[in-house]
Picture 1 (cartoon, rainbow, N blue to C red):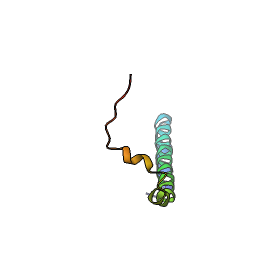
Picture 2: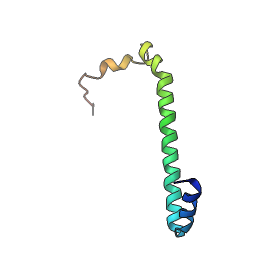
Picture 3: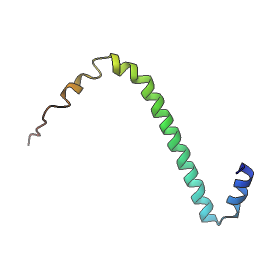
Picture 4: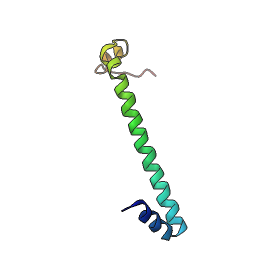
Length: 70
């Protein structure tokens, strides 16, 4: 469906439905942008986490038992 056709169809909807469509579209765009930014950030930091031992020092403790003191 072309953009003009889509806009015409949206204009035919009642106001509450138009608002709903717009909110969903905005949410979808934000979600995509956040995923894109997270992937970019992870990619930029991958080399650091693979090579900087200070960043992963505590992962050695991952499989040790944890006891909470009260």
